[in-house]
Image (tube, rainbow, N blue to C red; front, side):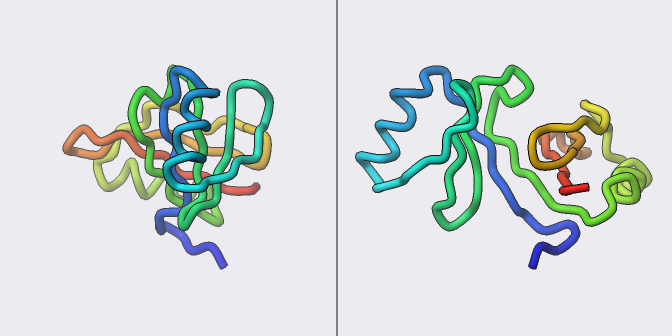
Length: 111
């Protein structure tokens, strides 16, 4: 069961999707679920995905929330800066934020 505020997913940038997938498959035996030509998901101890998306220029830890709007309010009240407002994607919705030390993270929900 997913829990609020817990690490749930990790997105990693991939400038060459085929080379990225080949490396992780050969080195670690990973397998992938492709979601179009620009996204490959993995489930290798922690769910995650590779993306060439400019919104993910470095590794992006993604936390979970049952109530996305309430979690965004908590992030803002604690001093986090919203860098990408809530948006929909296949499978749910999420927002991105920067913590007080400048780390970029995201929070997602199925709803």
